[in-house]
Image (cartoon, rainbow, N blue to C red; front, side):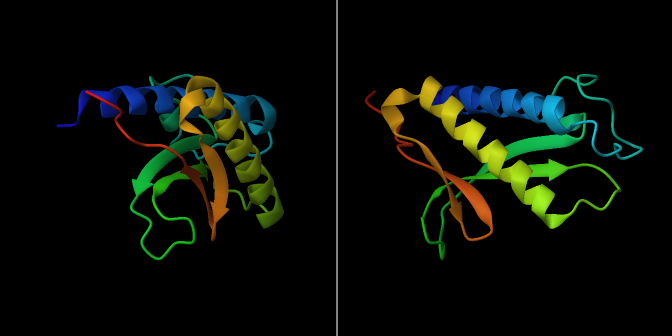
Amino acid sequence: MWHPKTNAFEKKMNEVLDEVDTELEKRYGDRYPLHPARAEHGETASGQHSGLFSVDAYFTAGYGSEHGRGYVVDVEMVTLSDVPDDIEEEIEAEAARRVEEKLKERFPERNFQVTRDGPVFKIRGDFSLGTA
């Protein structure tokens, strides 16, 4: 069971991630074939379960990381094809840029930034629940 403000925050963040997933599908979705067990984009209730991309974020306490706690942005390409590292990096950087832009629109008071933290991109900023 989560605090209601946490639920509201994560709902908005998931909307952002779904929007970025759709943008990636439009821009890059035809470059590689889908995994045979994967539905076409838009055929499931969540963008995370269909199409070439699954864009998600999960919270980490950040122990041992350069930037500490935050949400790691996870961009997965669901294909059996070999995707060159430079293409994967281009797509991940584009996703991180769009996530940051959209979070700043939705949460202007929280000062979110999406920065590289070692091998991953991390959302950093004000995750407080505010006042009761």
